[in-house]
Image (cartoon, rainbow, N blue to C red; front, side):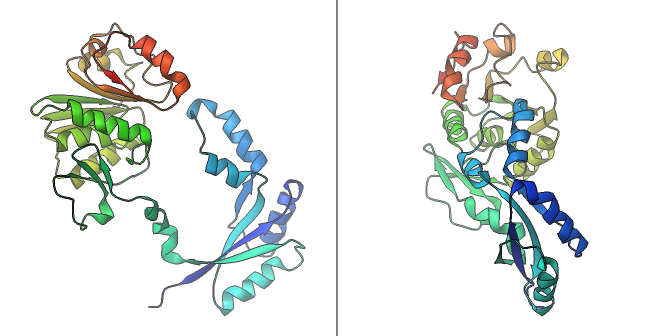
Length: 294
């Protein structure tokens, strides 16, 4: 069967005409629309400031001045006829860009390439696992999934270097705010005996287990839990025995932990701070702990 080809149609308008354009397209029979509006985008960011620490500049640039409506039609005679029908009477400029059907599902993968990190680690997207691994490197196969941790961010790379430096074969590891599990699974690949990973996001559990399975690591060595160590005292006490604690600080999750807690006092890990202006606060909270700050 021939691959279906699609056209992405982008109708450019102004913020005050967005509703009118959407209404006209819906009346013409096209009700599956993607709306890009800078005003709504900025309002969303402002109303959800507690959920993010920074916004990628590339995304801000792409949304600057945006007031457009997108939809899709097949790139054939039927699709072209539909396009003519949908845009008749719109009085707006639009662009039509070819888009292969497979591109929707897989085009994002092109942004992830194998990474050499530290002296030994080699982070490999799982769809590239058949590629040769450089001599002397330990392969770590990863599905970026839906949560933090693809290995591409400088913060994650610093943490991975720290994991490599501080992982001692036979030792147990605790990963706080594990996201996709990249740090604790890397420790297991490098010889840690077992690891427990915790994240406040329940989605992280399945993603981390999936990434562990990609590396041949079963649940007898790896436990992932959804929970809040700040709010759940019993969970915090349960996790207090670990000598190696891995955490990635993004400004609000790790800093509130009481530096007097046994779990924190016994931590021998590495902290990587995403934002330089928060480094002073992080150092103040963790002052005196046996860790390396970079």
